[in-house]
Length: 49
Image (cartoon, rainbow, N blue to C red; front, side, top):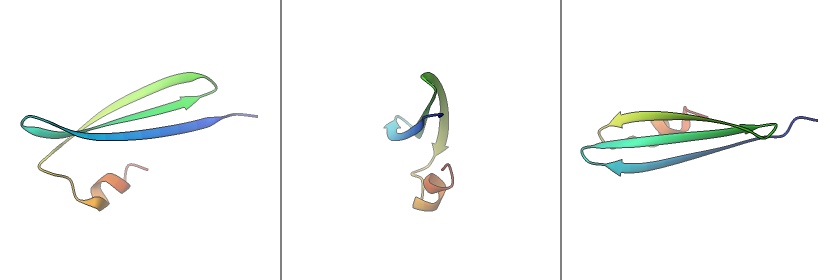
């Protein structure tokens, strides 16, 4: 059976808000960086999932 997990971390890195999405599938890590620019709205963050 495949095991999948994901985590999104959002932080401020002058001058932009940045999101880092981490996904682990069968022990293999994939990472994606998203630059939001201005402070992201809730729906902008939730759409990533």
